[in-house]
Every structure is written in C-alpha cells, then in structure tokens.
Amino acid sequence: MQEVEVTVKKILRFGNYLFLLLLLTGLTLWISFGLASWQGKTGLALLLLGLAGLSAYFISNISQFRTKNSRLNFIFASNLAVVVLLIVAIAAAVNYLGVKIHKRFDFTAAKIHSLSDQSVQVIKNLKKDLVIKAFFSKSQGNLEGFNSLLELYRFYNDKIKASVIDPFLEPEIVKQYEIKTDGTMVFEYGGKSTRSEEVSEEAITNAIISLSRQGEKTIYFTQGHGEPDSDDSSENGYSEAKTGLEKLSFKVKKIVLFQEAAVPKDAAAVIVAGPQKPFFEKEIFLLANYLEKEQGRLLLLVNPFEGAEFKPLLKKFGLALEDNVAVEIDPLSRLMGGNYFMPVVAKYPEHAITKNFGYATMFPLCRGLAKITPPPGGTTLTFLASTSANSWGETQYETEVKTEQITKHPEDKSGPLDIAAAIEAGSAEKKTRVVVCGDSDFAQNKYYIFQANSNFFNNAISWLAEEKDLIAIAPKITSPRTVNLTQSSGRLVFFYTLIILPLLVFIVGIGIWLYRRKL
Image (tube, rainbow, N blue to C red; front, side, top):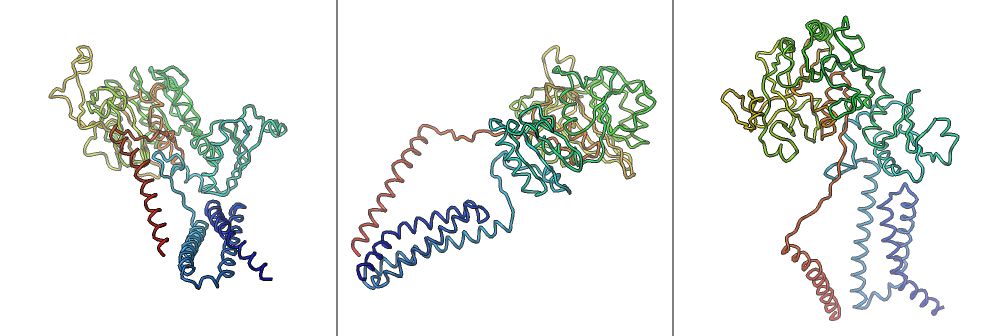
C-alpha cells in the first residue's frame, strides 16, 4: 500500500509540470477563441484539468512542505499559483466583458480593418434580412477578402445572411442565378436583387443602398456646347464619372437643353461640365426656372475665362465667378503631383460633401470664386475647397504661359482662393441646391481616379440629390511601415538586442541560481 502511495506521489511530482502546461494551454485557448467556440470550451476543460492536477499534487505532498526547503519551495509554488489564479480571473473578466460589450479597434493608419461611418449607418438601417450568395470557387482570389469584409458587416447587423457557393460543385444553383463569372455576388433584399463582381466596401455598401432605396433617381449631363461626353472613354472624357454615378445606383442621361421646353421632371440633378461654347439665353432661362421655381439641383463646373452667361444666374445666389487662373506655389502641392496651375487641396471645411475627407483633390487649371456680400436672404454659401495662402489669381494667364514667366501683378488677387462652393437657398422644405467649381478637368477620366477627385464629384451629386447614404469610398491603401536606420543606429540595435539583452537574462538567471543555492 505504501509503495502504491509513493508511486502516485512520484507520478504527481513529475506530472505537475504537465498539469501546469495544460493550465497555460487551456488559458491561451480560452482567451484566444472565447467560450462560445469549441476551441474555447476545450481550453476551459484543459484549464480545469490543470488546476485539478496541481491541487492533487499539493494535497498529496502537504507533509513534505513542513521542512525548511520545502516550505520555501511551497512559498514559490504558492506565489506562482496565486499569479496563475489572478491571470485566470482577469481572463475570465475580459471574456465576460468581451461577450457583453462589442467593440472593435483598428490601429492601422489606413483603417483597413474598419468600415466607414457611412457604411455602418447603411448597415444599421437594414430592417429586413439581406441575403448574400457569393459564388466563389476555392481558387478564387477574392474569397478571403470577401470573408473579411463579411465579418465586418455582420458585426453591425445580424440580419446579413451570407453563403459561399462553389460554382463548380453547385451547377444547378449557378444555372438558377445565371452566373457567368466566378467571383459574382448576388444580393437579395425586400424582393429585389442586384449583383456585383467587385469585392470592396464601396461595391457591397452601394449594392445594399440600391436595394434598400425607394425608386431610382436620374442625373442629366448637358450636351451641345463642347462639354465632355459621359460616354467618352478617352482621357478627356467623362465615362469614369458616369460609371461612378451608376455604381451609386443613379440613372445617367444626356440632355440638349435648347431642344427642351423645360428641365425634365425626373431630374434629380443637372450637370453642366466645362462648356466650351456659351449657353443660349433660353437654356439659362430653363436652368433659372428649374432652380428658382422647382427647387432644382445643379452641378456647375466652369473653367477659367468661360461661362460668362452664368454670372447673372449665380449672382442671385450670392456667388461670383472671377476671371483669373489660380497659381499655386505651395511646395506641398508640388510634392503631391500638382504644378503652378494645378492646385492640390488637402484641407476641407465641415460640410456633407467633404465630411471625413482624408485625401487630396486636384483641380487642374481652375478659377477663383467669390462671395457677394450681403448674400441674398435665405441663402447659405459654403466654400468647399481653397488654395493655399501662397497662391494668387492670375489675370494675365495667356501672356505668361507664352512667355513662361509667372509673376504676381498688383491686380492679381492674393490667396487663398476659393475654388469650389456649395449653395443652399430657399425656405421651402425642399431647398434649391447648387454646387459650383471653377474647374471641370478634375472629373475627366485622366484625373478622376486621383486621390479624392472621384469622391468629391460623387459626393457633390449625392448631396444635390439628397442621397446622404450614397457614398464613394476611397480605396484604403496599405503602405509599408519602415524605419530607416543610420549605420551607427543599426550597430546600436544589433549590439543591444543580440548581446546586451541576452547577457542580462543570463546574468539574472545565474544570480537567482546562486541565491537559491545558499538557501
């Protein structure tokens, strides 16, 4: 009987290390996966098993703890046990709070693991189940990205139901939904459906918006005066701008105003972009009537020294077009790709169009705008973009371009110059809204994709059409975070991490060993 007892004690003595390992492993699994998953439940079981084993070891060896050395060892072991129990208690509290309080933190500079505030608002407004059928094969490169985005969306609303279907394993479902491309997502909500092949926050959010929104709004591009064509895919065309609006679920049409008796009733907004020839008097009258009597919406992009026929119309809203060209000599603009006649704006005022803008906007060859004081009653005018204090409004542009001598003259207006403005007028429930920019080139295909140019254009239309949920989310760019070390700094890091720190650990270990030898 005594031999059996001694054998049990030996097993427990050598097994206490195993029990400690089980305890730490279980604690790690529990903290990492939470109690809701099978990994977390396994971790809890290992944790309890480790605690039970260590308890059995202490109970079976309690008589040996009466000697001096054993008492000291028991004190060390007790301290370790207390520390472990404290860690377990803290972990339990963290897990409990994690279940009760749902909060995510994204410490990346570009917030690549977070959704925009606008997307979150759209998701939270879902009242019915949103069904997403993602047709991704195992070799589809976007599957991982889709799953990551789906996790973010589900975090804010559990009404999002998604399933991944392998098109090669489920041909009947593929035929039912008429799927032609591997990587297609089908969205179903409230009896309506849409699809997208682009795995991005912008594509998914705008698909949700298109399904949850009532009705369809139409945007008209004016034609007949040399404006860029919305179907032109060349670098000077506006096809990218049109595509961007269609992604926001707008219907895009063209209109020749002098052939119409009035602006169409279904116009959510009218875009006049860079006309090279003057508008006819009738067309100005139609636009004025549309704005003043029908509380219409207008995006007016007028290049320098053009569009004089719009000045009387804009004067009614307290805005003047200046006859100059913005010259920007701010070094920051040069660093971001601009030139003297291509201001780059990186700071914006608080407005729905520019809210949370974190990127720069480029305006090639733009003119200044000015506020007429006092503004008409009931009119709110907000400037959306301005050049730097180092800029000025050049009035002799043609001469200086030919001579290649850019000089500020006394008659040139000093910066900062306001180059874009948003106007809201009227006291009715639906107010007149106008957005004016002293440049139309920024929305051309060659500039549309630059930083926030597309955001500025699309958000202006969304604000005009009162579609506050519609968004144009700039791509989140991940850039490597590197530290450039000098040769001396590199040697210091090498010496400290590979020699000093290991040597300190070794010395401390030897000291503890010698101290315990003396006990």
